[in-house]
Every structure is written in structure tokens, then in C-alpha cells.
Amino acid sequence: MTLRLHRFALSGHAHRAELLLNLLGLRAELIDVDLGGGEHKQPAFLAKNAFGQVPVLEDGDTVIADSNAILVYLASRYDEQRRWLPVDPVQAAQVQRWLSVAAGQLASGPAAARMVTLFKAPFDHDRAKTVATALFAVLEQHLAQQTFLVGAAPTIADLALYSYTAHAPEGGVSLQPYPQIRAWLGRIEALPGFVPMPKTAVAA
Image (cartoon, rainbow, N blue to C red; front, top):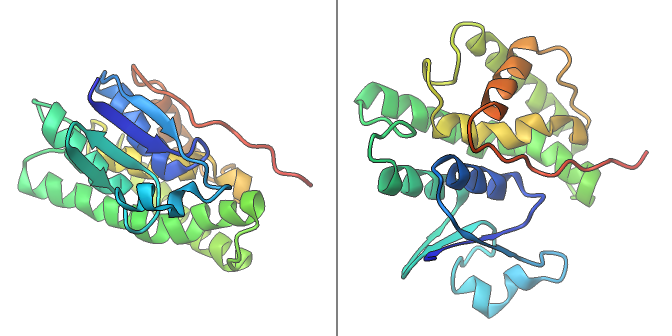
């Protein structure tokens, strides 16, 4: 086994990488990083990712940091039919658009709101929920017109947005007003090889 994924089980960033590994049928050693103990800030881990963040993927001697970069690498390296990352220029650009959303509005919206409630992160919770609501309004309208984010088949764009969207209620952002989003989440969860991210109860 040459694939090793350094992760934190409650990280949506790590989950999107783990999800693609499973959907591609790839076996990987999952290595849990002790974020609470500061393992990600120690020299051994910083040698893999100087930003001190999970996930990090090792494929033999190749080291890939950043969850979206890992998605691009796995889809390019191991999906010969390029279903997960289309080579068509228009579709490829559309995938990249949603990867940017994952690193932007998703991270500063539902992901940040969840960080506040679960890990007491020093973010503006109200602002994060406002960003999440604006993002979900766009997603709801988009998904009313097509099955997945980039057409009729799932791509890494869907995986990049799935985890923090599915777990948005843990950050105080309800999914009840968004039937199209909930249906889309269900379609992803129905894919062969899907693995969930653990749910976390939020203390009242």
C-alpha cells in the first residue's frame, strides 16, 4: 500500500479526500493527526505541509497537501476515464469554479460556523451563517436545473462541497429550506463506495 492519508476524522477537508479515495476504489492507510495535541504544528508534519493543515496525501514519494489539490491529483492519476475531473475545457473550468467556491464561500460560511460551535473557533458566527445562507441560496437555484454541480454526473466539484454542506446543521445552519440541496446530498450518499463523515452532536 503506497497511499497514506493524514487526516482528522471531523475535518470536512480531510473527508472529501477520503471520499474520493473510496469512490475510486483505492486502498489507503488512514493516519489520524492529533490536532488537539498540536501534532500538525510539529516539524515532522510541517515537512509534509508547511501550513500545518490536514489533509496530506502520500503516494509513494509524492506528497500532496491541500484537499482540493488532492482531489485533482487523485482524479488525474487514478481515474483513467476522467469522470471525476473532465478534460473538456468548459467542464474543467466549471469544476474549478466550484473548487474555488469550496475554498471561499464554503470555508468562510458553513465550515466556519461549524468550527465555532464544535471547536470554539474565534470566528464571527453570525457572519459565517450569513455567508452560508447566501451560498445555499445559489446552490439551491443551481441544483434545481441539474443533477450534480457540473452536469448529469458527479465530479470532484460535488465532493469538494459535500462534507461541510451536509454537516452545516452542526454549525447552526439548517438545510430544511433547501430541498434541492438535500436531494443532491442524497444522490452523493447513494454513490457506490460512499463513506460518511462522523456526525457530531452540538452541546446546547
